[in-house]
Length: 109
Image (cartoon, rainbow, N blue to C red):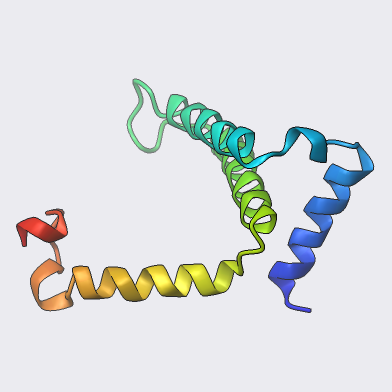
């Protein structure tokens, strides 16, 4: 079993030990992701990039990753496969020779 699958198993066990699966439908996991992402954003509000509390950043980022992994697990998605697929898709949309050093969207390159 890969380290990522072991991590997902730990997350699922944590959830199941508390009987929280009943609350973790795809809609609510997606909403929770949005809320946690907003909490991460709030840590940077009115600060420069070095002004955020790194301990809090770790906590919010962990929440985001946990909910993301639970959502992938809910749909039986292989996280490594979907990330590699997205990287391939993005490499085609953003070829190095056009995108390097640019923040433009793919349709503006």
